[in-house]
Image 1 (tube, rainbow, N blue to C red):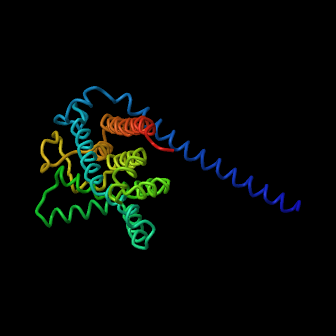
Image 2 (cartoon, one colour):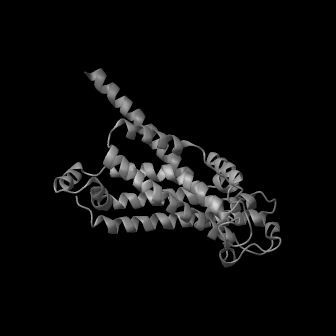
Image 3 (spheres, one colour):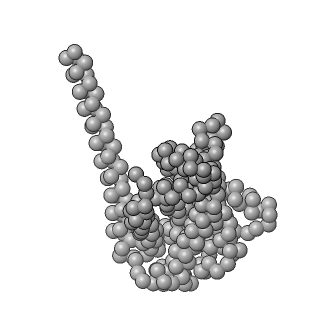
Length: 286
């Protein structure tokens, strides 16, 4: 008994050390990344970067800003998230309401998990091939389509997992009162799991706005503001990449400023989602 007791405590101590080490490594890496971005990005951040487009010679250290990339990223991520929502919410509701735990639902979830794990450059290459087949050039619309494909499995699986957490008694009570499965899905499931659905939407949005590989060939890049769906559009990840590729320290520091702007956008979305979820939780039956 004493040997078993001592062995259990030794194993527990080893795993505590491993968990603490992992926590320190993850937290330390995050703090190091944030410190690097903030220390190099804040000095280069200016009002001109937020309100102006790149002027002639911007990538050689001259004046200008990245307003084109900010708007392009917001347009592409916003459009991609909206289109993904139109397909992912009905899919998630159908999986839970009609297929439930059938074998077909397991196949669909497996396919979505595989799509989630596919590198984003594959979505970009697929979108690029599709655009060539229909004669479309790199454009804002191409970037929206690529981000839609990228966000669709993420949003669908996140919503599916959230909906599966709903108490089954609520659905059974609604069916017992004479509601159809469609009415249960739209009026009971959606309302009950709305905070989780909002979180899934914003999770997909954060993934889309920070992706560069999927929009590299589909959206292209331009120093102009996005004014048409059929014209190229800039994005913040590509703006960071192009500026870091320049050999001029001033331009490289602007890349860190652009990374700081992207981080602040994602942070604002996260904080806004938490505030919205708190308000929506008041209407949830527990």
